[in-house]
Length: 115
Ligand SMILES: [Zn+2]
Image 1 (cartoon, rainbow, N blue to C red):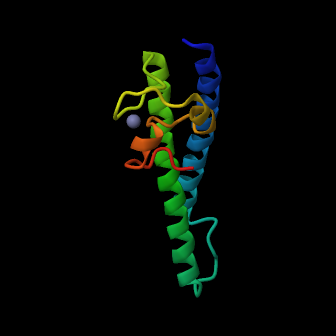
Image 2 (tube, helix red, strand yellow; image 1 turned 180 degrees about the horizontal axis):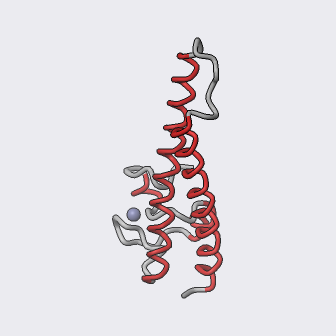
């Protein structure tokens, strides 16, 4: 494994734990109905809070997939190559978005690399 990938792997693992914690927290909140307004009259507020929560969780879930996928690619030794065109991804780009699996051009067709 390349030295640069060791550092990226460590960051990805950290990010994975953070995302898992976020998701676990979101699920607990959704199950208990906690963290939302307690006033019954606040239905609209409740609904919008819940919708925001779901959006955050969807985003976290999507990121988690990308992070886990990037980690598996580091293990396989395929990390750093664009999934679509196979060209090497700019290392500077990977330092900013380590879970990114696409080069700049191909990323326009995918959401993985959204910052
Ligand atoms: Zn590409």
